[in-house]
Amino acid sequence: MEKLRIAIIGQGRSGRDIHGAYLQTPQAKEKFEVVAIVEQQEDRRKRAAEEFGCLVLEKYEDLYYQSDNIDLVINSSYSFQHHDITVDLLNHGFNVVCEKPAARNVKEFDDMVATAKRMGKFLGIFQQSRFAPYFVKVKEVIDSGVLGELIDVDIQFNGFARRWDWQTLQSYNGGSLRNTGPHPLDQALAILNAYEHMPHVFCKMNRVNTFGDAEDYVKLILTMPDKPLIDLTISCCDAYPSFTYKVHGKNGGLKGTMQHIEWKYFNPEMAPKQKLIRHSLSKADGTPAYCSETLSWREDSWDGDPNGAFDVAVEAYYQMVYEHLLHNASLSITLDQVRQQIAVYEEAHRQNPMPAIE
Image (cartoon, rainbow, N blue to C red; front, top):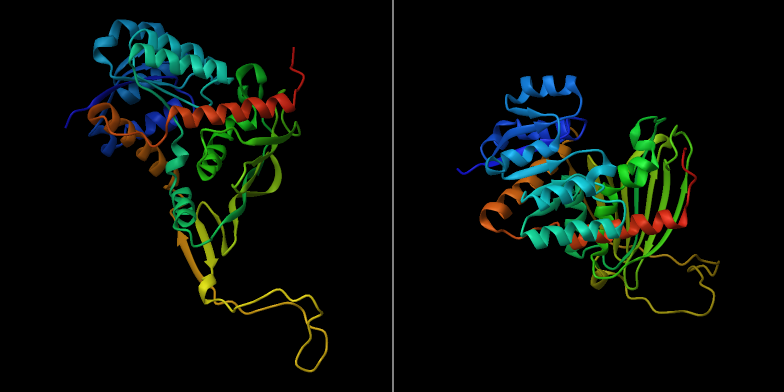
């Protein structure tokens, strides 16, 4: 089986603990081979040499001398570096998977996309949560139509945290919307499934427990004609952590977490026939009655592996990339889809300007 030769830029929580961890698994090694690591910090370079047993470099520019031996570069640099490094790599003839957030704004993202097109190279954004088993199930239930017309989708990615790392800084393209947001926002936009139009955006941000100058609370409301309202909360000040979905539909609803999902619905054709009544309702004995009926509900549920959900999503993303680069298979996560997400970020921040730390 042909293998893709991979270079990873960065050995932080993303480059090492997500991309590197997956690419070191037995199943990944059947299709991928890590041939180079780039890392600025000396101690991390030493560890990478031991863990990967491959070429280890200090500067990503040194990859240019290895271009004949590299099929794909994973850009897991600091978030504020994503645009510049990705464009540089593309201009030097590399295929690139860029970590999220892909860019600070639509202008930067469009520049990345235009560069990839001009150079005839692959550019992918690491939106692996589209493949998370719990979301695949949520989308499956929605797409089946059993819930009927969707009215409201409530998504919560909440916990309690006081953070003081670089991802709390605006200058590093940090903040909860760009740190955590790429996961649930990508899923929310997939539910709307109207990538050719910009949704109406209302956003309220706040800085609560962060030691940086970027937001750690986000309330994001997305609306579009003939689409459900999306209510997304990303909070670092929720003492009762919740990673949940709740869907309201005309014929039923869904609720769940990353581990357990339940949904119930009824068949309108099997429901009691009703018509509008303009006078007061009464019981058989003539006393006042509340408007009510008995529906025949069907209920179902799903249980997922809480420990394997993230790994499944990462593997599915890389399988997509592999099939695309080697067999020209279509991509289920496209650059146009990611562009809509970047546009929502930009509008949310426009509505919530925050003073920066000097």
